[in-house]
Image (tube, rainbow, N blue to C red; front, side):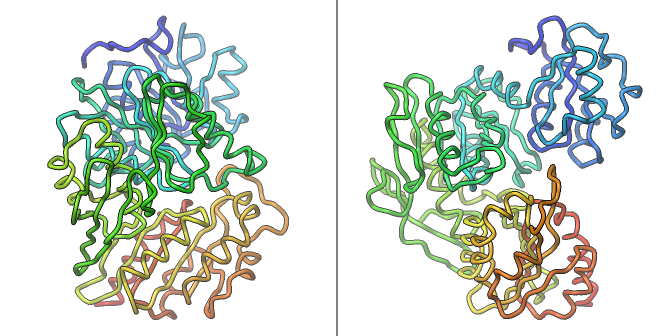
Length: 471
């Protein structure tokens, strides 16, 4: 381990304790600081593969919310200890309470990430949906280029089996997925920004759609001098929000955009498209994840890559071998001629609708069964009608109970209430643990397992059940 060249979060100590260390964003930061020689510890309520990876790298992790179990470097009497938490961990958590009662300052993950972005030219990807795929693709393009990159991504990149790209000491650039939840992205210092969408979300935090959109205006107002924004054509980003000396570009499917795509085609299960730029056309590009919704994400990533200096010769092969993100349209074929299972993280109604339309386009005429787990009571309440319309685009819908995450139940907000808004001819609510048996009563060519909650832990069980049924 080499010594850190970055400013210490707390100059009097090189020990950092992450409360919620198993989170996808927290684990990436923990690995970053392990590399730079810090003593790293953390807590999470359940062991995960990322936790095993961090422990192998030297992190000390607790799985019991018990301050008496803290190793010595992370006790409250240690001078200058840095404690980092994610908003997903409640204030009444025992470790948070322990540090608070002992006067140990606690900072949010976003504040620590903000310190990292100030060391580099931060290429930040924000938006109500699409940001994980877009940021991971941008990071992949840059990692394969002469510029190199470091990256903090909100998902496991299948090309690298990791949620981060680190250790590129020669690169000036870092790609950061900029999360709008809890206004976290306001702690960043972007050199350039992609905004994928500003469709309202997290209304439990922002209150109104207008306040949600205004937060993106504040974010792009943080651009460094000489920076720029690449915003999707319908995203509510306005030039007056940008600092003087910065620029706004648009991307999408419209010819009015600075960067736009057309001529999308399938050759078997391979997807191709043309990309128009201010400097010419990149023709017959192959996208390694062959789903139409990702053409829009690829357009944004390529636009950013071109603007910072990548060449077509670098972009073309990297785009074709991009494998995507774990739980973003991740496909498993059951046997030789069996059904395809698609693991899909979509959890916002606009994202759900576009994902399902893309799947129908990739598998025309195929029988599709959708299993959807709503994520958060507040999101389900705020977008009940929109979810109903989006889910009604397939004929066979199975709803799981709502995944609460950090929330308490809201009276009247249930999967049964959402089911009433769905017009599909075949629909029902089924507990996740009953899914394998339930699916025996459904006939499908494509099974979509969708949601941002703990549905991901049921997918391997469903796949194993289907494989046994095929034998």
